[in-house]
Each structure stands twice: as structure tokens, then as C-alpha cells.
Image 1 (cartoon, rainbow, N blue to C red):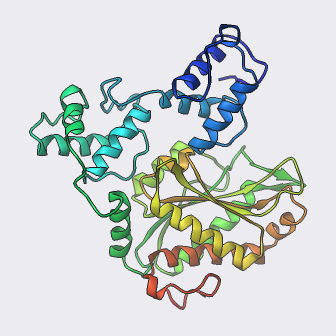
Image 2: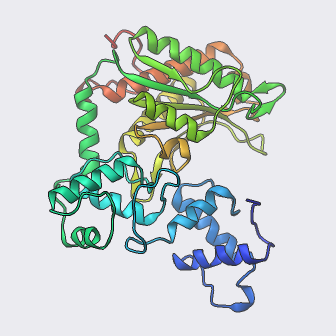
Image 3: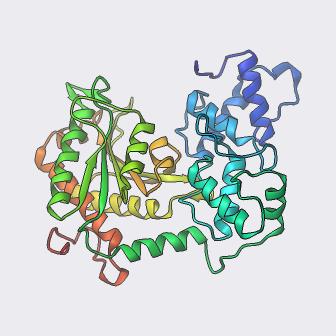
Amino acid sequence: MQPLRRGDTGSAVAEVRRMLASIGLLDNTDPYTADQFDENTELAVRHFQQRRGISVNGWVADETYATLTGAHWRLGDRVLAHEAAALLVGDDVAALQTQVLELGYHLTRADGVFGVHTAAALRSFQRDYGLVPDGICGPATLLALRQLGRRVMGGRPQLLRDLVAVADAGPSLLGKRIVLDPGHGGDDAGIVVDDVREADVVWDLANRLEGRLSALGVRTWLTRGPQNSVTAEQRADFANDVGADLVLSLHVDGFSSPRANGVAAYFYGAGESGSTIGERLADLVQREVVARTGMHDNHIHGKTWAMLRLTRMPAVRVEIGYLTSAEDRPKLCNPAFRDTIAEGLLVAVQRLYLPTADDPPTGAMRMPAVAS
């Protein structure tokens, strides 16, 4: 869609304002401004983007519009079912997933997408409670959900399951399955400054990290080749198809101001929903890379980008410096520096699987000495 921004008018703006008003972010009672993208509308859009883990710019483009459309649905507004040709997406789906999780049924996360795993979990619930196990959330299923309380006590059920799964996987990296996702590629070069292309930098970094992981017995896959690119959805589908344990998505940033610099890590997170292990891995990645490189710490952040939201395993996106920064760019062009980053990423993955008692201080671990 054509992005909507301050100063625009028309029916599309009126629809956006109605949706913002329906979720309590905008007073839309003045008929004279009902179709105007004014300052209040921009502030409401920014608030919505920040709350939903979308890049904050105050515009309504494809991602913001799709998320806003899903946000106005409430559980019970419509019948929910798995439709392979057009997956249902919305806050009502997320609310259903949260309730199923709270009742102790297995789902990767409450991502607001009614996929096959949501349908399977719902069928399990229906069988257990004497309902027709059709995987459809209609009036009878909705009534049963509302009449029941939580079955799992003592903490967030998904967090407990995630922690157990990591502990059960054991500390060794041998046999782990990791997808490396070098961003962009092919005709999409990403950020380009002085003929230095983001796609080339992260491709080289991914190969350095792949070599280290493979040497430790990790099964690795790359989401693209050196001369091609795929969509974020295709990258997530690939990771799901190979049954990866983790995904590391590698990017380099850029900004209009040359003063922007440093590293940041992102995990799936929006409000109370998110990937607990993804957040833990993002924190480890961030701390290891900052400690080993001395780059500015831009911290970790929850986002709802497709690559993070659609993967069924923990996924982390790392923005390793700014090509637009005179401080970061020479470092990123240095192969030895990329080796240091690869080592930090490798150590972060290893630390994720180590018991707390065996986890060394940030920046202290050297590989492969502890990986056997």
C-alpha cells in the first residue's frame, strides 16, 4: 500500500483513525478531522508502533496497517479456524493462544497467527473437555475456555517449558541445529556506503560463524546463497522446515546521521507476548559482542518483524554496527574484526545451553575449549 503520513486525507486515513479509536489510542469523535492524518493521528500511530514492536516512524505502511487491522479483533468477534490459504491473524488469535498456553497445552508462542500448531493445540483441548475436536474456536469452545482457569501454576507456563527444553538439550553444541540468516542478498544489497554492501559483509560473517559452528558438530544452514535473496517469510519457513533449534539473523544498520553507531540485538516480543529464550539469547549476544569489540551498546529490543515472529524456535536479529558511521565502517571492513564478532556470537550460543553454575563471565569464554 502507499504509505499514509501526516497531511494525507481520504477514506484510507478515516479507516486508520477508526481502528486507532477502537483500541483506545485516538479520540475520533470530531467529524471535521475524521479523514485527516493530523498530528494526533501521527502520535497515536507512533504509540501503537512502539507498543507493538514495529519500527517507529509515524507512517502507516504495510506492516503497521496489517498489525493495526489485527489489533481491533477481540476473542469472540469471529469464528477462528486454520485456513491454509489465508491464515487468520489478530489479537483475538493471540488471546486464544494465550489461554491455551495457560491451560498447559503446547504452543511455541502466542504470535497471533492461527497456524497448524494452534489448531492442533486447540483440538487437544477440545478432546480433553468433551468437545468436538475440530480445531475451530466457535461458541461452544469459547464458552469452555471462559469457564476454565489455569492448569499450570508457579510461573508463566511457556517460560517454564522453554527453560526445561533448553536444560534437556544439554550443554554440548554437538548435534544442535542452527540456521544462519545473512540479510538481503542478490539485487538487494541492503545498506551501501563507499561501495561497501551490507549483503556482502553479513554473508562473509555468516560463513565465518558457520565454519566455527560446524567444527563443533553443529548442523548449520544458510537461508540464502551469495547471489540471491528471499523474503523474510521464506527465511522463517525454511528455519521451520529444517527444525532448527535457533536462528541468528545477521544485519548491518545505517542511518541519516553519521553519529549513529553501535550494535543492537532483537528478539520476538510485543507486550506480554514474546520469546523468552529468544530474549535470553539476544541478551547474551549483545553482551558478548559489546565486550569483545568495544562497540557502543544499543541494548536489546523486542520486535514483531516476520523473521522473529514466524519462526517456531528462538530467533535473534543482530544489527552489527552502522555502515554510515565513520567509526563502525572501517571495523566492519576488517576481516579480523568480523572474526571477533563471529567468536562472540558462537560464545553466546554456547552460554545459552550452559547451566547457570557453569556459565562464565561475559567476555571470558574462549572456544572451542569448553564446547566438547
